[in-house]
Image: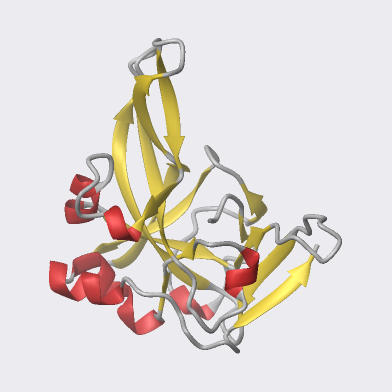
Length: 204
């Protein structure tokens, strides 16, 4: 599962022509951070929008009091059925640009090792996201938020040793299908990368 990611180098050719509106990059993006996501406009192409990481949903806590929950990730297997994400998946999809993400695999001594994970030959790439507008129950403020889709890692990739979930990563040629394609087209993209030589792992 991705709970931190790196978008420190926005000026790469993957999203050529995008105006990052002064965003200079952030090495470790955390939940609730306001950061860039990409939408598509038929007249002007990819457009950057700043949104806060994590859907905000309210339900009772252990005490019975209604509390806010931050849903930073959405399981792809549940995206068409889970109430928290279904409408956004149908109508409000985005691309989450990143240079890599972080996991904490356990080494042979049982210690968690913070590890940066990237993609070979793709210094900047996009993950599948969804977005919506939430209302803060305390202040009434409208908040633009997004959540990241995740999948189980491929059977033959070393990602399995890092975590049992990974971001839903998109090929460059599939960005438009994710943003504007039919439900069948989008469903065809919901699968892990199986190539075991795709990823870079760097302890940090």
